[in-house]
Image (cartoon, rainbow, N blue to C red; front, side, top):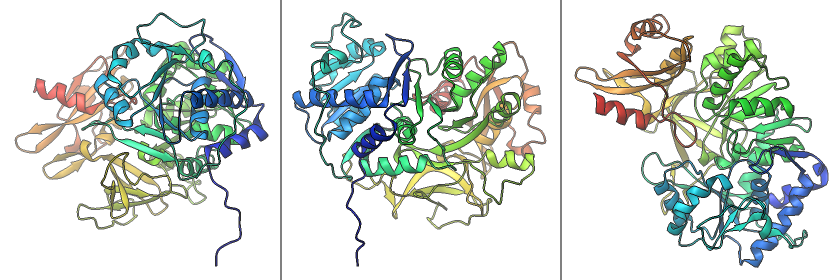
Amino acid sequence: MKGLMMDYSLTVTSLMRHVEAQHGGSEVYSLTVENPAHRTTYAEIFRRCAKLANALRRLGLTEGDRVATMAWNDYRHMELYYGISSMGGVLHTINPRLFPEQLQYIVNHAEDRFLFSDPLLLPLLEKLHGAFPTVEAHVLLCSREAMPDSSVPGLISYEELIEGESDSYDWPDLDENLASSLCYTSGTTGNPKGVLFSHRSTILHTYASGLADLISINSTDSVLPVVPMFHANAWGVVYSAPMAGARLVLPGPKAGDPEALVAMMNGERVSKALGVPTVWLGLLQYLEASGKKLETVTSLVVGGAACPRSMMVDFAERHGIHVYHAWGMTEMSPLGSVNAPKVTTAGLDPAARLEQQLSQGRAPYGVEMRLVDDDGDELPRDGKAVGRLQVRGPWVANRYYRAEESALEDGWFDTGDVASIDSEGFMRITDRTKDLIKSGGEWISSIELEDVAMAHPAVAEAAVIAMPHERWSERPLLIACLKEGESVDADALLAWFEGKVAKWWIPDAVQFADELPHTATGKVSKLKLRERFAAAA
C-alpha cells in the first residue's frame, strides 16, 4: 500500500519560491569590483533570476545544457545559481585557480554552452577562450559602464545581457532527479572528475545542513561563506542560508584578505562564517598582530582539511569563538559530518572535550559511514580500529559525469580517507590514503604530526610528508613555516614532539620554508612538496 501524499518535487525552484514568500526582504551584502558595499534582497535577486532565465532562453538554452561560471562570491553569482538550475539548465561552477590545462579540460568535457566570468578573471579568459570550442557566448559579471577593453570576441556585460528582459518567468515543473549543478574535483591525479548533483540531492543536503547539530543556520544569523561558491557549491550555504531566511554576506574577491574579512565581519555583524583552515590561520594571525577582535562572530565552521588544535584553542580562549570541525567532499555535496556534542559527551572535562572536538564529528541522517580493511571487511566502531572510510546516502555520487563505470565499491563510495569511528559515532580522519607514512611496516599519521608541530608557538603552518628510507622504507619529513618575527631551530622543533607522540613517529628532519604550496581549494599540496623535496634528496 502506498501513502496518499502529494507528489511534490524537491527542486531549487521550489526553494526559490519558499524563500521569496517567507524571506524575500532578507538582505544580501556583496563586495564586488564595482561596489564595495552592494546591498540587495532575496526578492530582488529572484526577480533578476527571471530576467536571466529569459535572456538564456533567448540565447537558446535548453534543459540539461551546461552553463559555466568562473566567479567569486557575490549577488550576481547567486543569481546564476538559482536562475540556471530553476529553468532546467545545469550550473557548472569552475575553480579559476586550477591550472589552465585543467580548466580547458573541464570546460570541454562538460561541453559548456555559455561562460560567465568575474572581471578580475578577464586576463585568464583572454588566454583560454579560444580553447573552448563549445562555448557560444562569454559574459562578464559587471555593468555595461564597468566593461573593460578585451580581446574576447562578442564579450558582453551581465547587466547588458539581462537588460530589457521581463522580470517574470514561467518556471517549469522540473523532475527532482534532473541535474541541477556540476562541479569537478581538483584532479590531483589524472584529469578532474565531474560530480553531477540533482535537484533532489541539493535540497536534501540543504535541509540537513541547517540542522541544529550541523551548521545550524537560523533567520537571525548573518552568515559569511568564505568558502568559494565555485568549490562544492560553497558547502551549500547559498541554499541553506536563504532557506532559513538568514542574511548573507558575500566577500567577493576579498575572501583571502584577513584585514578585509575582519572589517566585513564586524561591519556586517556576521555571526557564523565558514572556510578552510588556511583562511582562518591567516585571519587569526592578523587579529593577533593588529589587536583587533571579531565583535559578533560566535562560531566558525572549518572544513576542507584538518583543523589544527592550536587554532581551535586560540579562537576559543582569545576570542570566545567556538570552532566546529566539519568534513566532506565534492562527491558528497559536500557535507559528511560536523562535530557537535551529544548528551552523552557534553559533560566531558575540558581536555577530553577538546580532544573530541578535533575529530571530524558525527554523520547526519542522510550519510551512512563504515570502515573497511584492505580485504573489504567491515571494522568495529571502537575508536581504535582504523580503516578506509566509505559512505553512502542520497547526496553521495554514485558515478562521475560521463563515466561508464560506477564510482562505488559494493554500493559504497570510498572517500580515500583513513579514519576511525568511536562508539558514539564520532569519526576521526587519520590521514588520506596517499598521505599515510609506512615506516618499518607500521603506519604514521601525517595529520597528527602536523597538529603537534602547529601547536609550537613559533610555527605558522606545517606539513609532513614521507621520504624514502633504506632501512625503514619511509620516514616522516617535517616542513615548517615560522610566524613573522619568530625563530626556532630544527633540533628544538623536533624536541617539541617528545612525549606528545610515539618516539618512533618523530620526524627525522625539518625543512624550513617561507610558505607552503596550496592546492586550488586551499589545502596544502603535498604532491608539490613531495616533488620539491624528492628532487632535493
